[in-house]
View 1: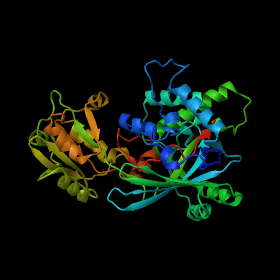
View 2: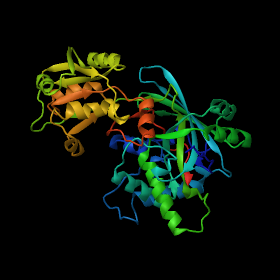
View 3: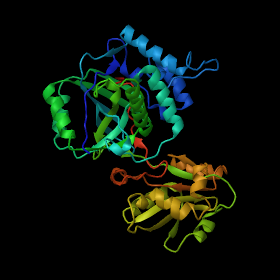
View 4: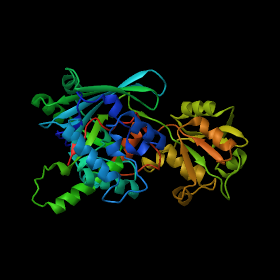
Length: 427
């Protein structure tokens, strides 16, 4: 299935009334309670009030709750001109300047557009992970109340020849919005262009018509758009096939963009009965293919596992008796999923260590992106073992998605996140 990308009449902030840097927010699913407080205080018109509003003790579901308040904020800001709905359909190009994980400044360019909201088996967008029902219920309640898609799905394209030239043409003029926000690793600068020139829009769509699209972040948001489209289609059988609710808002980037980063998510084994209690005990439980080499600290062990990654599955291991590098040679696997480091860790290391698949589902693991927390959690006795992983690659994500498989939980963390508030899609 080839990609079908459409323009939209987007809702966006009015530069005459707001500073863009003050009204953007991270995606709802990475906002901590402290960040939510900070975003509420940053600007009274911050999009977080629509996309991830606070709940209060005296809320009355359906009458006065965070969903009805989101609807009221959206309607009020549109009437006051804080937000504006563009008069004609367009594509939008966003440039994100940010701090790269290893330092230095990087730029990533994204295209905000629509794709058909269809079930996964239609292969409009290809997923790589499973979703949880609670998050989808929350997003669906918000979409029903606001009749808007307030945060885009982040996806990547693979195989779009000629699109670079089209995007350069789209951004030749001045942006319509720009501003700075506080990112995960430092200040970020955001610029937004509106693209309605028919020739440029046609060139972008044509370039993407031969591409395949893969979800990076936002599986819940896409599934919510699909569910909402089915609801509205059933309620409005005479609606045209190109009704706005039939589509999902996405922000697309190139899969081979060097500024597309996936960060590792490390594993912590919570205390429990029957677990490997030390590196020596773990080593004794593994088969003979595995090699173990002591390391002075987690950083050294992670560097060593990164150096070995091309030919080995390699992990940093932390326990009360020290730190080590655990590795074995890569071997041919039955499927792309089987060859992932995270899969091999679960099947060949965690299982014999006493953490089986059922235990993982029940919360036997904690997760962190902070390598230092592996040692700290073990010292605090919050964890028995810590495992430092290397990040998955975009090629691995694509291979798993192409094979219609899913990756283990917490296998990918794409960085930087696409902010909420650049463009909203009214449905």
